[in-house]
Structure formats: C-alpha cells, structure tokens
Amino acid sequence: MNTDDWEKLKYLIGHKGLKVVSLDLPTSYQFMNRTDEFTERMLAAFNSMMLDMLAAVARKDYEDRRRRQAQGVQKAKQEGKYKGRPINKILHQKIECLLMEG
Image (cartoon, rainbow, N blue to C red; front, side):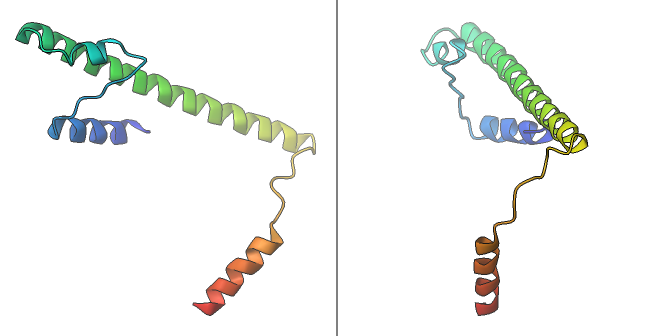
C-alpha cells in the first residue's frame, strides 16, 4: 500500500472511530482497557506512530521483494533461462467463446 493509500485508510479508520488491534503490537490491545485519559491518549499516539512505522516497513519490504524479483528475471533473461509464463491456450479459447457469446 503506498503512502497516499495508507493515509486515506488511516483517515477512514480515525473518522469512523475504529481502533486497530494487532497481535504484533501489544500496546494496541493494552489501551482497550479503560484507564485514565492521559494514559489512553499516550497509548493512542504511540500506537498511531507504531502503525505508521509498521506500514512503512511493510511497504519497503514489498518494494524490496519486487525489485529483487525484477533483478532475477532480468538476469535470467540475459542468460536465456527466462521464458515467462507459457500461454494457456485453453483459457484463451474459453475467454474468446465467452466474449463471442456476449
């Protein structure tokens, strides 16, 4: 998810008053227990920051995997080992029939 999409999602979550609880983020469910207002606000701010950081880490991981995959494909093409996915002729025939049927 890119930054703009994450910001939109975060806005929708906040606008609807939803709370995100993550097993990987213990403070996200600690603040579900009612405590004093100061603690609730501190945990909410901390959880928001942590979720932003986790979203950034997830995005970076996704981009790194895509980059490494593209590098591998490029190297395989240069070595003549990469042919891509073979054409599924049966699937193409089914699609063509469905398009002709309307």
